[in-house]
Amino acid sequence: MRLPRLAVVALAAALALTGCATGPSTTPKADAGEGASGGGTDLVIYVGRNEDHVRPLVERFEEETGLSVDARYGSTGELATTILQEGDSSPADLFFTQDPAYIGAISEPGLLAPLPADIIDLVPEGISGAEDDWVGVTARRRVLAYDPATTPEAGLPGSVFELTDPAWSGRVGLAPTHSSFVSFVAAMVAIRGEDETLAWLEGIAANDPQIFDGNEEQLRAIAAGDLDVGLVNHYYVHRLLAEDPAFPVKNHSFDAGDPGDVLMPTTIGMLASTVHEEAALDFVRFLLSDESQRHFLDEVGEYPLVNGVGTPEGERPLDPSLISGMNLPVVAGNLDIATDLIARSGLI
Image (cartoon, rainbow, N blue to C red; front, side, top):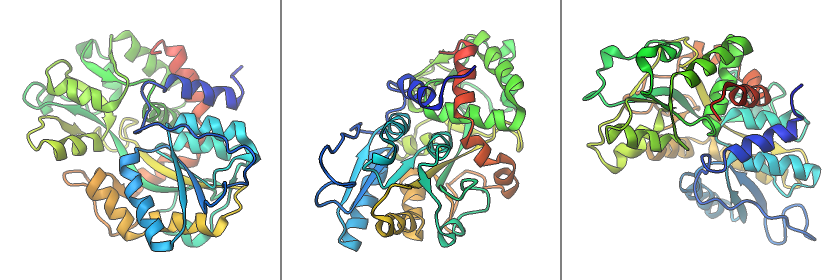
């Protein structure tokens, strides 16, 4: 029997404490004695994303609207746990996550409110909750990072399942406590089922992988010649190339339709307990504006989800069949299963 949802999310958050930090972590503090959003604040947002990526947009929103925003940054897992503990008393108006599985953990007990159609319709069909209570903001793809100077592209696998072959023993990096990996496993469960996903996890664990706290550490190890390939999200290469155009690591995509080729949207949902609904919805619309979407494309290297904004340089465009095939509402509900399977596999 699996653990209750709060225990699972707390476990996932605890596992991720060293690997899931998304910037300067400022775990939200309870505003004892204050109203839902605290005195003088027009909007409270729990942000499970890198502060450097989101803060400029929060400041721009404040400048454009005159509203005061209290953005509280932390890991997605930590913040999901906090919201589940706070329940209807949460001071948060919005929860902005870096992965889909954790928004599902908040949706399932009914802590999110439905979003209006004018917001849901801004993104491709299928990148929203089953009850329209969350919506995708941007997207990342899972890829295999490598250095073509040491690991020729011709020898890279077309399927993530090939990484359990003894030929890859000791050569694969992954971050099993990172929320992106947990959500990736949640997606694999949605595509191939629990038994096949557990068999893959156990095969990877038996193949002596190199374990890291996060994705960027894997890319730096590859660049240093200490690792051959790493399972990461695509945009880390773009971030490090922005710092150093000579950074030697590239992304390899698994074959279309392979469980290794999955879409990982960042998501946002409005708490059902919000007393600032209008401001909250305006912020969601702001994130889905062309201007904000281009910020995530140009500054972070993520896929915009609003049509016509663009595609990250060097990455293939989003395939509509990939989006529909992901069944993201199901992925969002698989956090407990994914956490359980990773633990059972021996990777953590």
